[in-house]
Image 1: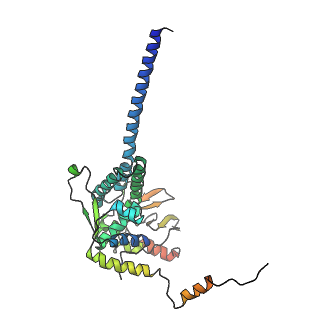
Image 2: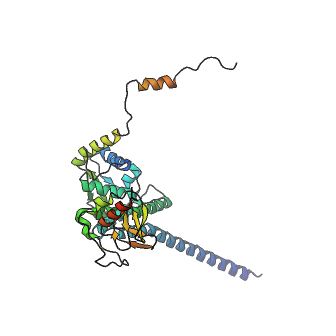
Image 3: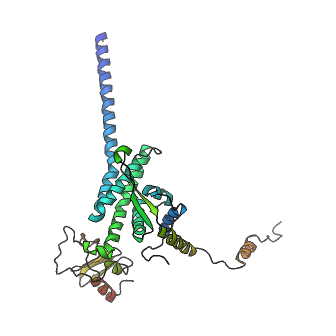
Amino acid sequence: MYDDDIRMTPATGRLLKAFLDDPAAKRYGFELMQMTGATSGSLYPLLAKLERAGWIRGERESIDPRKAGRPARRYYMLTAEGATTGAAALAEFSQQFRPASKPGVLEQIRDVTCRPRPAGGIA
Amino acid sequence: MSAVNVVIAAAVSFIVLLLGKVSLDLMSKELQGQTEQLPYLILRLAARRLPSALRTQYSEDWEAELDYILKRHDALPVTRLLLGVRYSTGLLRGARQLRADYLSLPQYSSEHVPPRGAVQSRRRVVRSRRPVVRSRRSVVRAVAICLGGQCVQVTRSGARCGNHVLFPHTRCHMHRKNFRILDATFIEKQAAGSSLLP
């Protein structure tokens, strides 16, 4: 079971997946918006929650803004705790949407969809 | 018409056209400069919604990100501007959420300060002994109720009645005023008794 403060929603799941796809990668806010399809309004509160829970760590780029010609951006990285707990939380969350696998279900579907049409008709 | 007049007319036309072109260019640059400031303006508005402890950090982070969006080389100017405006407009909502999350943390609940314009005496403010975040979760959906003949507005983000102001960021639609709320206990008791809350 994961941290109670992190309420798993589809948006949280997409964000976690973006981090877990490459756990060592540094992700920027706009990049995460593009990866997850989230708006800035929903992304930053989520990032703040994950950071508070210790699942991700935010750091500012160590660049000289004058030399780079732009201000230093903040990037986010998955922590070790986030990698383990986040992956478990995501697995648990996705499990909720997986249909129950009963033996013979696939065969039943196949029977219904692939049943031969009865011969005859108006001819 | 003499040849001199023709030459003068041509020269004047040329000067007028030249001045017109220069003016248009200047106006275009002026307009472009003003338009590019729009996302930054919205971003600053969003940053003002944050608690003071978070404002500087988020403001710098967001400005850096917006700067990146507006100066990307893989998009055309209008697209960049639209992306920038979309980014900073979203932050208006995000800032409100960040503020609510921040104030709901038990260690930061002391930051609840009445806003300007909301006249509240200390007697009216009933301080909760427990963190507001626990109480807020019990209010699930928006419902307007009337207690003792006074307007009470209970929403997901807050509640307020005539004498008691509960939860932060509440707007009383009857009185058309914004209130910041300090205590959750009163409204919970009243709402539980009225059976109007789910």
